[in-house]
Length: 92
Image 1 (cartoon, rainbow, N blue to C red):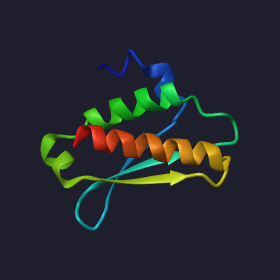
Image 2: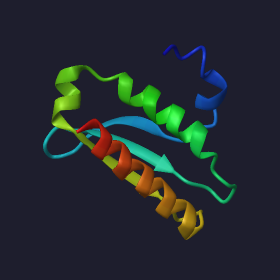
Image 3: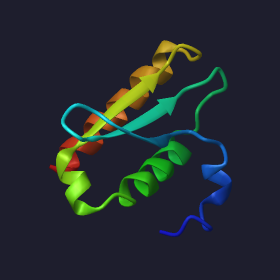
Image 4: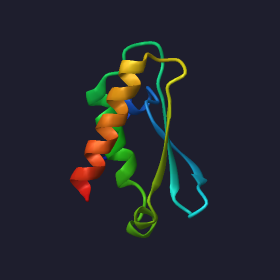
């Protein structure tokens, strides 16, 4: 998948790789949820794209995911966490 294809979705900044790493050198993925209803399909496309960027060596170290739901509703936060858990179970 190329960034130019999903550029309008990426501009919404639904999720991002900050460039930071956790204690075990895993990449940090941040999902800042806001008051507007988050489109789960667009979030899924964004996550698929962002998780395809790192090398296999980096992916092997894993990711730390920060879901910032301070500006969102609990049901949206819960849905995003469930999507992340299901995605994790499907991949492994």
